[in-house]
Amino acid sequence: MKTRCNWSNKTKIYQDYHDFEWGVPVHEDQKLFEAIVLDGAQAGLSWETILNKRENYRKAFDNFDVEKVSCYDQTKVEELMQNAGIIRNRLKINAAITNAKAFLEIQKEFGSFDRFLWNYVDGNPIQNHRKTLSEVPAKTEISDKISKELKKRGFKFVGSTIIYAFMQAVGMVNDHTVDCFRYEELKP
Image 1 (spheres, rainbow, N blue to C red):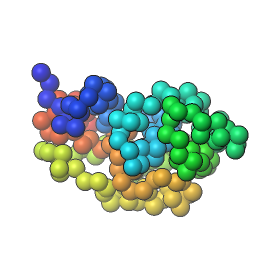
Image 2 (cartoon, rainbow, N blue to C red):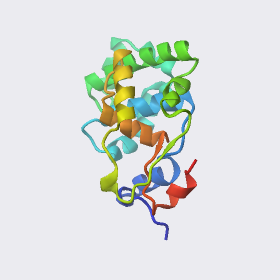
Image 3 (spheres, helix red, strand yellow):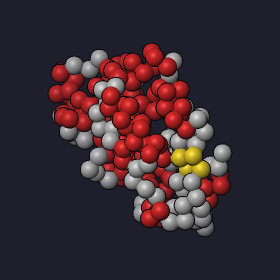
Image 4 (cartoon, rainbow, N blue to C red):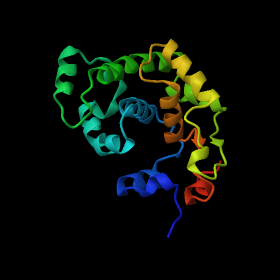
């Protein structure tokens, strides 16, 4: 029996997400765009809700092709508002489109969103040493900085708490508890 972070033992979908994705460094811009959209969609909801709807999101949002999403018009927004497979929140849907446009601008400026983002941690995941889930902060100084910069560039639904969850998801920080089998596996 493997020891996991306590939060991942609730359901099979959480366990699979924990074991194979959470905290694994992501450097592909398409996957980073997906993560930032889904983390924004999660605001006020459980992550399990988003995981259960993730495949629907991929279909609805053209597999998170940032170029396509940046071109969505009001007709597409209305179509998405009728899609019961995703979170039908107009602000969150519009934020995904707005964020796609801002994401493309960062790609133009830095060559990739990955390069822009990972600069905040000098290209290497931050190795934390949390013994319990209660030691994990909701946000950090770095998530504050990233959030502030993204907002300045026009992003929506990118508050510091959302950005810290995003950083954990894409492996910018290793917040697996020290007794979790993934902690050692993901050590830089």
